[in-house]
Length: 491
Image (tube, rainbow, N blue to C red):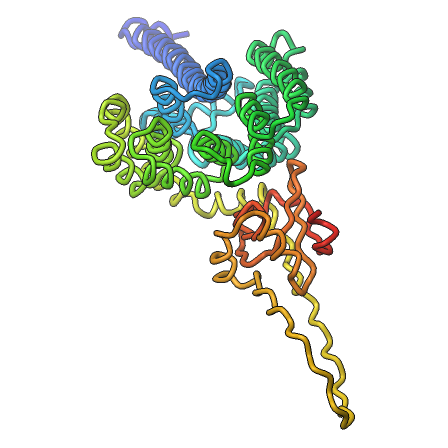
């Protein structure tokens, strides 16, 4: 006890007690501050993720709103709708990749320390840095959806739902967007099942959006049932277009005699092609309308669509420049351009950032692309016909030969197929039937079937000469390829 009395007399004990109290208090404060900071960063990251999903849902609802406006307007396009579409697309571009760079550097540096506390406290781990594979799959699916490549997007959401362990909110979000893609592919039963499976979970933050989309789809189905009773293919195609049944619209417009196809049918055909991801074919029709119709309403809107495809719905600077030049010299549409060009700088910057992001994650994205889009089966070469055995002819006076019609040109030659593009639909059909080999039958994921002659293909696309003209079809949308007799298929 003497050392205690001695320490008390010299003041060391008091200093020791005060030092211990100070360290304890400091440690408590540090722990408290760290925990508060941990919760702050975690809430910030969760809020960032929720904000991303909410904004993606906003673009989805905006698309639905535009479809309904179009139906109410009888297919008439308006400058205000185009501006709304540009603004919605701008959000979609921003949300096509998760914006990890928006998280402050200090927060990134703090995360490893905070994750140590998270582990001790049993809290979820904060994810910053390398994007998890499931997020990359979701980003890719949403990117396909934004660019109207609905079959690819639906497959991406299939992988996201089927391959990863998800929270209820993550699953609901994917179901919403897969349902919309299915609806755009005319797969209404599957789409409605996706929407209703989310809507029944009343505590889901996506339930209200799901209910609105289910209502939209039921209204769409009712319109389509009525449309099927309309006899005129031109009118039926227009009604299908207004009901967002774009594939059916294209099918019906193709049945209208070429000589009776007016500018409205051509424009709506291009719009339906655009809405189904066939941008190049749509642009070709838009260019034709602009070059031949001057400042007519259809030429003006065709040029506006080209501008949107070059800036907000795609990243094609040359197409955007072409459209802006047309607005000054051909269609005289400076007023519309002035209302949307202020948004173009943001879109250009975001496209550049997305390109850099994709380049930085090229290896990750390549593996995800392979996961979402399986490789197409190798194309089987056409069986070579055996040459008949040559016999020595008998020495007889040959009968006078009747002049035979010239052989049909080989449509499997790309140059020949492009030259024959200008023929009428009836002559195209006759030419396809005359091919020496069987013609190609392609069954698509959406149920459509195309007959014709494949004249070219690459890793992603098949180029088909058909009675509808030269079609460019995405291999990922082809579910079955067959060879059939031309006379039997084209009646």
